Length: 119
Image (cartoon, rainbow, N blue to C red):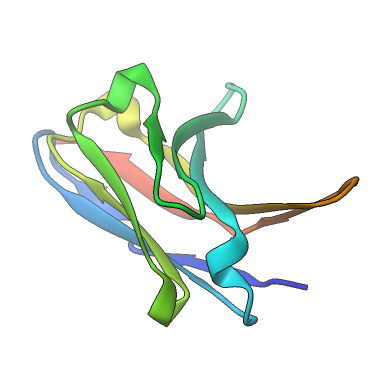
């Protein structure tokens, strides 16, 4: 069992920056692929960025060049650095942990942190 605690959201003006953090419990953090998803009102949850256990990253086209995902295995933490924020980035952001063990997939979610981009 893994528990994820998201933090770092808030209100920021367009063009500003925020850094989200997600701290995971347990001792298998390094074996999980980690991701950040977001869900805006009336929209489906979408993948923003992900990072594999080996450090390979992937980004949604809408955030490429502006957001950076990173992980610090020693601290069981994954980060999402968000720069040049736009109003359309407004959403609840959720941390995700994913691990496959044979035929079993383990998926865990954080509680979400609100990001609001507005002047």
